[in-house]
Length: 294
Image (tube, rainbow, N blue to C red; front, side, top):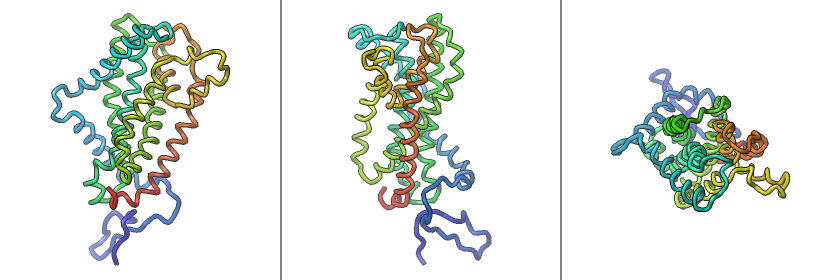
């Protein structure tokens, strides 16, 4: 009998005469926590592999994690801060944009790389069984190394300017978790779509570019007051609330607008949850086709 390639019900023969049966799911898609725990070491190795591959045979190595946000900060600070004179909540424009670009670079990197992760790991998908969820998840976790380096650079820059981070700095891990959830939800959906439709790799850079301008450029406090409560619809973009909260947690004692942006952040939570749930369900429904399509 030819086995149907989907989920292994046993990881190996318990004795020389036993048989491993692989059959498709017969229930709704769900996270098999027991299976994920069984393969936990693989998730670690996939994450570590992505970290090493990112800097393998690069001239500057981890310095890229600092150079990319610094370069974008210079461009944004000059064009939008000095030339266009867009408002920056009383902060120096360069610091205003750097505080936004550090979390944004993590999100954009995790989303872009996770969307291509299944196609890039075709050699694994077609040879062995393991939870396919681990591939985009490992890419997202590997990006935390870049975030840690860039965040340390941001703190050093603030101290060099004589700015002490606000005590609300302790909330940054919560915002980072929301960023991970948003990028993972969108990445799961796009990675599954990319297996079937290779056009996705051309769409993702445009999506990330548009998403960046919708999240980074303007502070929420400068949206027209005449919009009233409608201003909070801006928060349906989850990264807008996350970036606004990230700035506030670090620099609210230096900003002209000191109202905590929790309402804006809360508006994005349903979008983040929807992306995560829909992305996971779509990923699980199409998982059985990956090995044939990739």
